[in-house]
Length: 110
Length: 118
Image 1 (cartoon, helix red, strand yellow):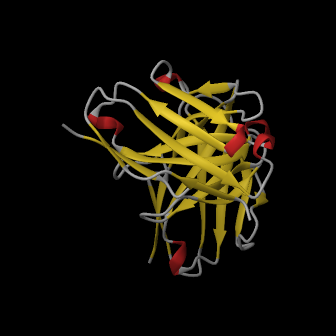
Image 2 (image 1 turned 90 degrees about the horizontal axis):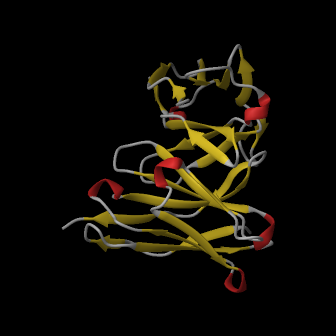
């Protein structure tokens, strides 16, 4: 069974750049998998950051960007800020109406 | 503005059923799929399934097939998630979210905590 993988945790310095990735346990991610990215802080509903690989949701700062890097989807945060410290989740479309979340990445800014 | 408002918290015993509602406003209800996502305490997000409010057609994650039913009432712009044979590991916050494959999921409901405990 194909699973969606993310780094469990990542750390970035304030002002630094970090790239989180999202892949399949078997196979490559492409734009046809419509990768999307969500940010979640404890006790809150997720917030949409990126959809269809690289389209920023309304109101999302341009320091968040999405892409395909190699065989994975990627979320890059440029100029990380303290309030970027959150959990980040990707979603990939599996076909036949089914999508799957990755396990999430806990981002620490310090 | 587009808004999704969910029903309140529920406490259920094992083997019982629960039905959570999600009322949509601010857009054409039948124009977008509605998805259900859950999050167990301290765990990640889990995609459960989706319903087409126009046709009533559904797609469920394999894990929930046979135990989850998604329905809608177009007259009141509301979708429902019903889960049967509840277990303790179904304790989670359940979110509804509007979406399309190419547009991602946005916005999200506020979440409904379902607690399964004897």
